[in-house]
Length: 356
Image (cartoon, rainbow, N blue to C red):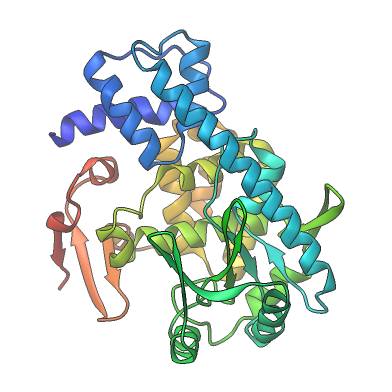
């Protein structure tokens, strides 16, 4: 498929993945066939399905979309149960922590099935990783991986090396009657461990607690939550490992940011968000995420105060926006096309050239 055709498909997908969509959307059969795969890859099936159904635009795809929709509803319920169980487990923690990303979004922001997740993420200071590990181990979680439906336990060397070289532990996994539950313990805001985790300390000093079922869900304050999403998106969108696996620019990551920017958005909030970004020294990462989210969800550009926020955090040099990094081999690549063509490219690896 040509980049032009893929971009046309993406333009439709961007609109249909907007939970606030108001305009009519039309497309032909060829685009419709690609939409299904695109919605699955980008984990926005249920939002797309509901927007199509409201507009009676499902054409010949209603049966397929309905099956996918029902499966996501079931998966979201499984996620919600796992989140509630983890919240109960973490009630015994005597250290600060916060549940990240999907844990809050699935339970408080999206309708059931509109957002699914393959794991639950926890943020802690590095010094408290051991305490968090003990709580999880005491409740049946073991570090390792699931391959072909089988659990493979990590060796002690695997665990130690991961903690030394990455910003999160090897996943903690527990087998249940309904499948495997995965918990990722994060102690850094980037790909590598942080020399100074004072930003994490500051974020955890501002945690927000929401009642959830018979327990409480502990998460980040709204501006910190958005900043964390931006940092996470930037990490995956610019790391070669994620790019080569085509897990770098999944639409749900931009959608998460967009949904919160609309929900909490105001002139005052955007001013405070810019101040917080600058305070953390996270202009580079957040400008990347917020600028590109606006390219996908153009409605953001019409929101009062949004462009002014971008102006305040815009780095002086924007060459990094087209750079991909291999942090292990310390190699920097570049692509020579605009961002929306980059998303539409089916072979991003072939589009990269070594920088310098």
